[in-house]
Structures are given as C-alpha cells and as structure tokens.
Length: 73
Image 1 (tube, rainbow, N blue to C red):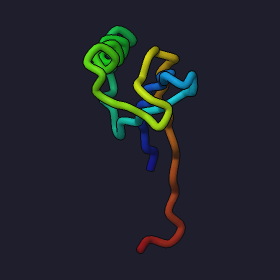
Image 2 (cartoon, one colour):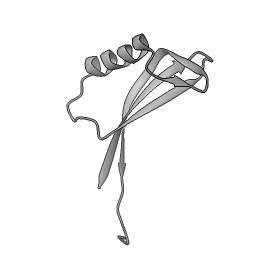
Image 3 (cartoon, one colour):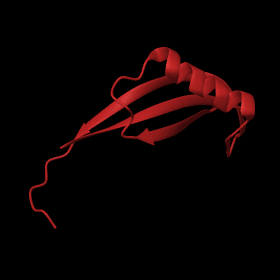
C-alpha cells in the first residue's frame, strides 16, 4: 500500500535545512497552494527549529513510499 507525505523544506536562521512533513496530503495540491502555505508559515513565524526561526523557502516535494506487508500483525 503506497503512503504519501508532503515535505516542506525551509532554511533556518543557522543556514541549515529544516523539513516539515504532512502525512497524506490532498491529491490535487498545486504549487501555488503549497507556496502560499509556506509563505504563511514564514510570515507568522509558526515554527522554529534547533537552528532558530525558519527564514526562507528551499523547496517542497511529495514523497511516495510503497510498503508491502509480508506478515501482518
């Protein structure tokens, strides 16, 4: 069964990358919607990281993983 997550990648105040993951994102997300959400996160300073506040958008991606159970619990 495939699983998906949306990874929002930011740069923090220390210059390092920080990734926020959203499990099971909506199928028809657009680049504009994702960018708007990321800009809102930055504008409202919603999250921080070990390297400080998030300061810039680095990228975003959908990660899909396919898992097949051999023995189910």
